[in-house]
Image 1 (cartoon, rainbow, N blue to C red):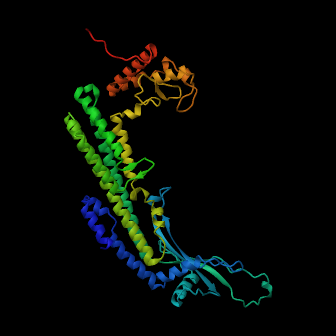
Image 2: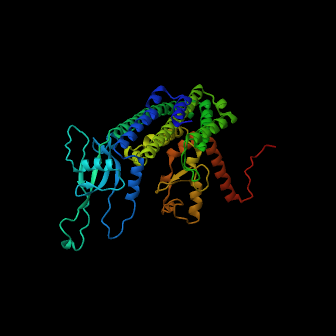
Image 3: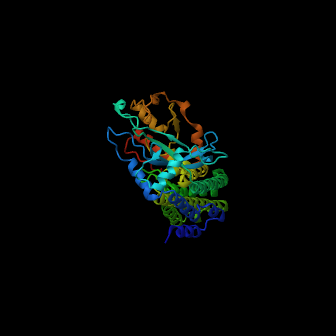
Length: 462
């Protein structure tokens, strides 16, 4: 099946909004325009085979005594209408420049057909005037042939060979890249709109979730807070759109994202976490959370489909013309934003800020020494936080340096370093862990007083 049909069916299969479909890369239109480009090049004798030979000759090493051989061509995109440093707003004009050898004003390039040599010769010798933004037929001498050491002994009739660059006026390549650049710009604008919409939904969801799981609102809110903590732990473990692990670091493909999202949802069902939510606002928040991830997955799929379409059409352009533009165009129009998964990464970062931070995770409040909750938190002068019990044991061993940054701060810690605000936060959001930490501290202290055989068994009345 041809890619044009696959592309069209993929847009239909994913059920993208009509606005998205209208902004998709017009692959069929670009193919038709490419045929015009190919025909235009053939009419002036610069078909694929000729340009391939010119490019091959340009790469051949020349001998030491030979004059510089600048034969060949260059094809690049020039930015026009750049406003300041905003290169993305610039329009690009493709320029095909051919380097030809003139001997006494006559083109002598063997790789070119007679008609092509005659055409380029006229361009090189003409002094065309451009008005109203018309294409320039500029040509200028680049490198006259090297003068032999004994040039005074050579008769005056010796032929003079120089190399001139000739800009070949083309029409349909400008149309091709104009269409492609316009659609890349439209995709970028569309995705910025969708990203802003998703981020607005995330902020709203974060505010609603924060109110729903506020511990001061009672037992049901506390119960939902614990459930949401488990939900977000699973979500972080799933790494649906982006992974920070060394083994698979980087953005996910849409296929990988679908698998990871399915794993996350399966875990939610297996653990019956949704059924454990007590508040109706929590149920609504979970539905909105899943909806945001589904919308983000659709954006990722739309990116991949259009990136593939651009890659295919640029490769086809190079295959039919040998102009070598497939690597130049993405860099010229800075398509990294609209053609890769950076939007998913940005939205995930926003979710981490607005949603996951509403439900504090225990791992963020552990003591780096004992890996239990850092209760009775002490903030050293270096701003690192440890539980008081661990710092007491370190000071008894005359260990002066912070385990994390090696600053000489442990012996300087006092009552003024107790972080009362953090302690209140931990009691509010992690009451079970705080109580367990207090019991563990008391048990360890009693063992130091009464010996290691001490066992904290409650007294019973006989």
